[in-house]
Image 1: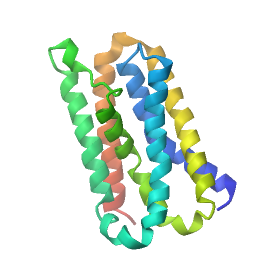
Image 2 (image 1 turned 180 degrees about the vertical axis):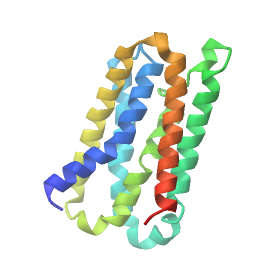
Image 3 (image 1 turned 60 degrees about the vertical axis):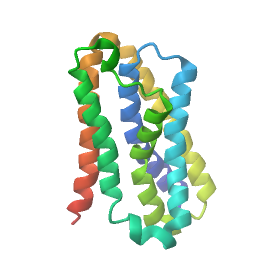
Image 4 (image 1 turned 30 degrees about the vertical axis):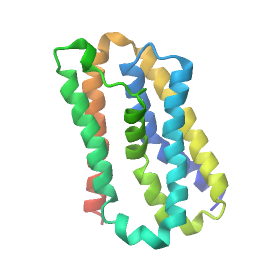
Length: 187
């Protein structure tokens, strides 16, 4: 796999993490650099490790996970998205905003946004001859995209956090639905 193709692939894989990061920055406008960096590292870790996992396991479990990978992404992203939409309408200010800095939330966000990267590992695993370079490139680009997304969300300000959480939930639902529909209606 040439480096230009790998770069484009890495950028494409980072889009979901970028969107989640913007939402996180909107939800947590007072996020500190170290907190943002930890969240970005979790998202980057999953984006980087999933193609490696797919590449390593492509022959043994490909037939098991490939038929349901889109459902897994849809359920994880949809569940988090629905929770965010519900919480945006909650009366209690303290319980309204999901905290992407909680490890459990960050873990599921990382897992949900990286399911397409797992599929990439399965589908182009034989092309990823330089798998360690691919892993480092995907992880690095996702980290910087996530940090940029958090900064964009943070700079937007807390005054729109209720609407941002609603929008964020709808975006996550949309991403999950897009993944599901792409796999169900392949041409």
